[in-house]
Picture 1 (cartoon, helix red, strand yellow):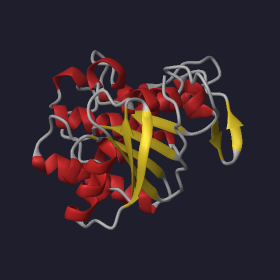
Picture 2 (spheres, helix red, strand yellow):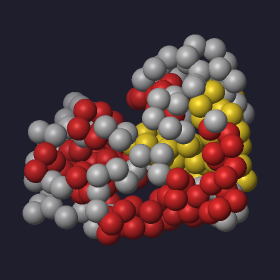
Picture 3 (cartoon, one colour):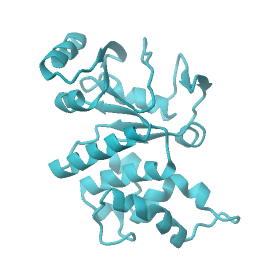
Picture 4 (spheres, helix red, strand yellow):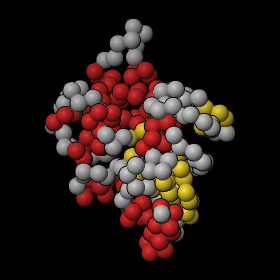
Length: 230
């Protein structure tokens, strides 16, 4: 379990969470959205104590979304078509009174996001498993955008995707921040972190060992980060 973990995320900010593999970054993210239990301390949303027991509560009550690096197991339902994967977070709002969702309503809700993210798929009926890694990553982002979250935790967003998709993804993250989202960016890619984050928290062995106000000066910031890791 993590100890000494205290941080604030502001609207319209990218908060970087940096640490080597095993530092506890993903565990921290998972406990924030109710996959893992918070053993001590509180999560405050808008200054109020939040008891988040599962991902659905995180989303519905507190508008927190999580894009996992483990797209295969957590992020997407591989055997479902693209339109169902993107609209999964808004199923509740799309349901009619008998709890049935029309494919047409689903596609209509999803289309703008598929376009905005430039998701390359033969059609909205395409099974997600057959898409490229980069497009799968975009699908997992699209579903949270469709849900209109306020906070998005993005875990190792650019692992295993090509350079162009990477650039696309960063542009999108930037756009979300402009719209006032708070983003927690978890990454072990130091250049990416220094380029993107407004502030950087460094984690080591389940605790936060330092906080850096990032001025995007690579040499200076990477030195600071290294200082907190060892």
